[in-house]
Amino acid sequence: MQINLFKRNISQAYLVLIPFLTFAIVLALGHTSYKIYLPLGLIMMALAVIAAWILGAHAIKNSDAEKRHLVIIASLLIIPWLLLCILSGIGPPPFDKPEEYVATATEQQVRYSFLLVGGVVATFGFTMLKEKLKKSGEDFYSWIGFIAMMIAAPLFVMNMAYYDNFMLETYKIRVASSSDKMPEWFSPAHSQFHLITLVEVALTFLATAAFAASLKSAGWFKKAASNVYIIISILCFFDAILSYFFPAVGIVLIPALPFIMPYLIGVNLMRRAGN
Image (tube, rainbow, N blue to C red; front, top):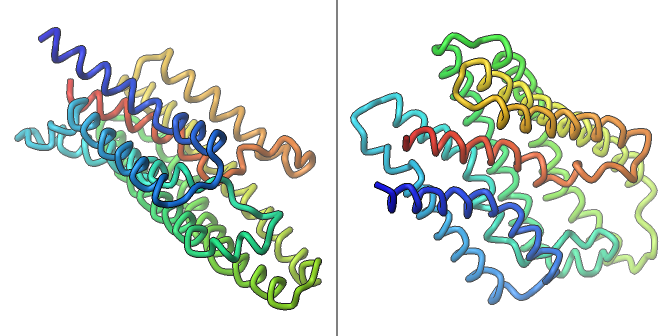
């Protein structure tokens, strides 16, 4: 029994570290060859899948429907970062180097396709979580979270489509014309999508805070853990809002960052499913 508990604790620790390991690799390596980062990312993902199974995903075999549903919800919240860790060596998007952006077009499109899939999957996860919390008797905070996600999700899809297609095609035009400036019509469009990003990210953090409050109210999570999720999400919510007036503070607008808190909630839900 003690050995099993140790394995679950190690598995949970590894899962918690996944987003931070991914960012560390991005900062340490920058853009590397896919022959390097793809095997590394696949190994990280495979270990994460094993860790999730040990932590609680094995409960999917349980005859208890509630446990199976909890595993599915937790998995949907975890999947976005399992996808993103595969691309840990792709580096940040080279927005200031149009030639490099065009040269790595396939990788950039894969990046935003993974983000798009992750956002859709996480939305399904929160939607299912809202229904489970409603059955447990908590339907105030979960409704707030659900409404915020329903507004944020289509904005996120628009945002990812912008980076996946519009941005790439614009850079292709600039590179083909050998110009050192972006087309005149690019700036208004970019400003518009910056505002969309701000609203989408702020609503995502608001939804995360609301679901954390719901999990606390329902007694699913300990108060201390729930309060950490709530406080961090609210701080990020205000950071997103302030970035409209002070662009330098808008670090939370990085597309992958809003997935971290839902991911960590998913890890804790996975632990609950395995208990």
